[in-house]
Structure formats: C-alpha cells, structure tokens
Image (cartoon, rainbow, N blue to C red):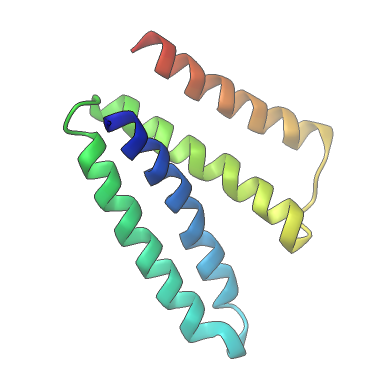
Amino acid sequence: MAWLYLLLAGLFEIGWPVGLKMAQEAETRVLGITLAVGFMAVSGFLLWLAQKEIPIGTSYAIWTGIGAAGTFVVGVLYYGDPSSLGRYLGVALIIAGVATLKLAH
C-alpha cells in the first residue's frame, strides 16, 4: 500500500506547480493558489503515509521524480513549454533513476 501512496503523492505533486502557474493570471489567481495549497497538502500527506514503510531517501526521490517528470509533460502539452530531444532525454533519465530506486529497494 505504501507504494500506491507514493505514486499518488507524486501525481498530486504535479498539481501544485500547475496551480501556481494558474495563479500568474489575475482571473485565476485565487483558484490557482487554492489548488496549489490543496495539492501540496494532499501530496504531503500521502508522502507521509508512504514514508511509514519506504525509506525517506527513496520515497523523496521518487516523489520529486514523478512530480518533475509529470510537470514537464503538463508544461509541454498545456503551457507551450519548450520541448527538445535534450529535454526529453533529461526526463527519461529522471524516470530511469526513479525506476532504479524502486528496483534496488
């Protein structure tokens, strides 16, 4: 169950940078900040649950890896962030690192 909590925590981790991005626009500022704080709280709580069974270094690295890779994808797909072979390679390395941490656990 701890690994499910960690996966969900990583997915919720994607929500708070999106909320902060939304908060950059005046018409969605309050909604964006509210979403960011909500996603932070849920993500943090799920990470706390996961860390009851998964070592802190492993869980934190996986949590941030899921969040970073997911936020990259959201940025490219919805916010026009730059995409290049090098950037995709960087995300692939993050995913490979996360997979290695899981397999080595």
